[in-house]
Amino acid sequence: MTDIMNLITSQLGSGAVQQLSQNIGADENATQKAITAAVPLLLSALARNASSPGGAESLYTAVSRDHDGSALDNVMNLVGNTSSGNGAGILNHVLGSQQPAVQQGLAKSTGLDAGTIAQILQVAAPLVLGALGRTQQQQGFDAGGLSQFLGTQQQQAQAQQPDLMGTLGRLLDSNHDGNMMDDVGNVLGKFLK
Image (cartoon, rainbow, N blue to C red; front, side, top):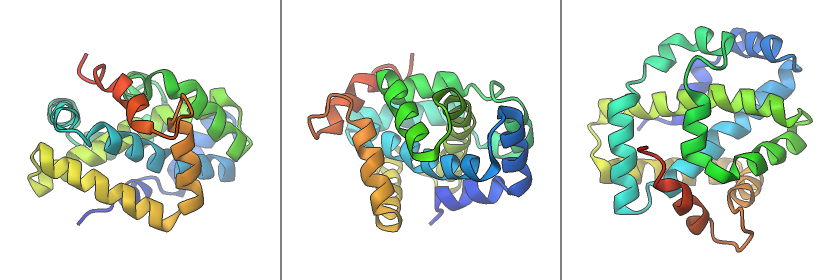
């Protein structure tokens, strides 16, 4: 089965990361570190969104309608123009009110400022949904299959990077009650708007 992280990483070769870092005025290594954190964070948020039947159906519909994987074919265009892939809109739907906290947390862990992190997230978001859309088409997932796939992706990321995923989980828990589901549920209804 496809690993979304590897699929995106293979599309974001050193040339794309270098171009992105130049466009946003950031160090290339810090940019790579931020991307490496942003992708599993977004996958985790999507997995939590899709963990309920209604959430899975909403995500499935949005991915089927708007994300066919073509973003993966236009990576250099996307990194050259961070506003070209509707990343800001995607982030608003996926992270909602947690977006500033997520940006600050990633900024702290990478040494980049929150504005630069916002630009990196705007590139990562369409790539994640594009990879998810492509995988959904290739595997023939229905809403339940998509939810299971995202859960598996989240578990793999947790196993490979437990410290990072623990930190990212805390970033997604905006009210700090230890339960991200209530926080993610607050943004779930916005996904199809």
